[in-house]
Length: 341
Length: 274
Ligand SMILES: Cc1cc2nc3c(=O)[nH]c(=O)nc-3n(C[C@H](O)[C@H](O)[C@H](O)COP(=O)(O)OP(=O)(O)OC[C@H]3O[C@@H](n4cnc5c(N)ncnc54)[C@H](O)[C@@H]3O)c2cc1C
Ligand SMILES: Nc1ncnc2c1ncn2[C@@H]1O[C@H](COP(=O)(O)O)[C@@H](O)[C@H]1O
Image (tube, rainbow over all chains, first blue to last red; front, side, top):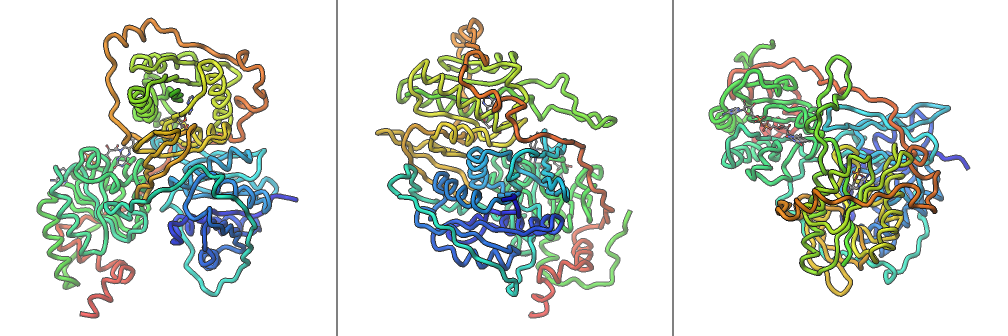
């Protein structure tokens, strides 16, 4: 049988899907159109029927479900063994997995067992149409200084992990229909050496990935105090606080707030960069924001190259004023907003 | 306890520049360093040896100049260092690399005794995949614990660790032998002591070539054993944006209200409800 279709792994925590899964189903749809093929979702877990239905609303044509008590928590052995059962039976030509910690853990195990080629951490995914049907998996290399396209010509399925926050999910559509196909799977808990003892939810973690508004601070803040002010602004705008890497390295804020190459890639509707110079390792992580505002006292800071709106000034003056303006609500219009240059 | 640490010598990608004219990497003058995560993996191994006794064997697959990284490992306190080098191994992607390293670890076990723990780094600066660790674990049929930020305990043949995830920390326990991949949060890397530095200067790493692996499958190594190929590379362009400069916070707030943000973010609706 030919290899056919694009399979996306649906990652979740206790039955709540990670948004990267839906983003990848969205991208898989776009690729499937080009190839004239279908999108499959792979759902693994314990009592995860609702996720299968959700995957269809998000764009999957067929959902393969591995539902078993040993799959309650993610563990490499039961997840990879059962995923391999599904992949060998379904024979997709492409398998996409979110480049999350668990996703990378799983992808590495699956690719080795198959065996096949696996491209890590992609940020661009395209396909060549018939007859090659190759996956063009592109990723940044050498600290984002270069992009490279990686191919896997002789092995199937072609596999890639893909960064969260890069690809766009489809709008959820409850009228979509599809097939849900359970795959039988047996494994004895006693045969699994690894036990998950606890999950300590990081209360200090921020959900940068799904944030609509991010107010991010850089070394220009000069210390941890500035972040309290940014938090105030972010709260008013219904957003969260981000940071450049030096701020995390200096301990001004937890590194879970870091945006950029070695932090989180974000795609908010509004990104306000305060005291951030705009190094490429930072801008690769936030360039996808719909509207970028830069507040920086250096008119030559490269952050202005990617900013839709810029204020050249000292944040210690601008940010409190902005908090005041936002607190006052809808502005009185009519006064000139500024000029393009 | 016998611990094997997989290290790789990498170009310090932070120092790599791009030739703006040709769009190619300028590799000249870029220092080669031990992959930063591997240093933390080695430190974890050394600390475990201090607590539990045993030995630390360091292995790398790479060109002869990777000897320098092995000497650094010796200077930090590793007991033995193995350089696996051969033209036939070069051009390997993660699948082929993990295959060879798994064979190397089998040979290490046969030479110095059974291995309880294999440590790899979270990822490399150049390969940047984090796939080699899981690849080795699969080949050796070891349990794998990736992204470890803390080893909580090792006792009675079991190991308990904290894994770092996006949304929190997972506490996991499993049976030895096991492969783990190390994060920087695990520890602070020590400095080499003077006697160790002297020992490292004199040290000659053990060198293994394909001749030392009579049973290795030549189809699975080097370029031939690598399913992935780099087809092209380019310098990413920065997207050009026309910046509207505004004079102060009030003007910015007004400007934002001329966009579709108030609708899309629900500001308008909130105002309407007031
Ligand atoms: C391998 C690698 C990975 C990296 N990954 C990341 C990453 O993921 N994320 C990341 O962010 N960086 C990353 N970096 C670091 C990156 O190269 C830059 O060093 C970093 O982004 C700079 O941070 P910054 O803009 O906060 O600081 P700076 O470059 O020091 O900029 C501070 C800015 O603040 C402005 N300023 C100062 N005072 C004021 C004031 N009072 N009011 C207004 N503005 C003021 C200054 O004009 C300046 O533009 C990485 C680097 C490497 C080598
Ligand atoms: N050639 C190699 N020799 C020894 N260890 C390696 C090699 N390549 C990768 N590793 C190990 O695998 C980890 C992950 O590498 P990578 O998959 O390239 O990101 C590294 O941190 C090393 O511990």
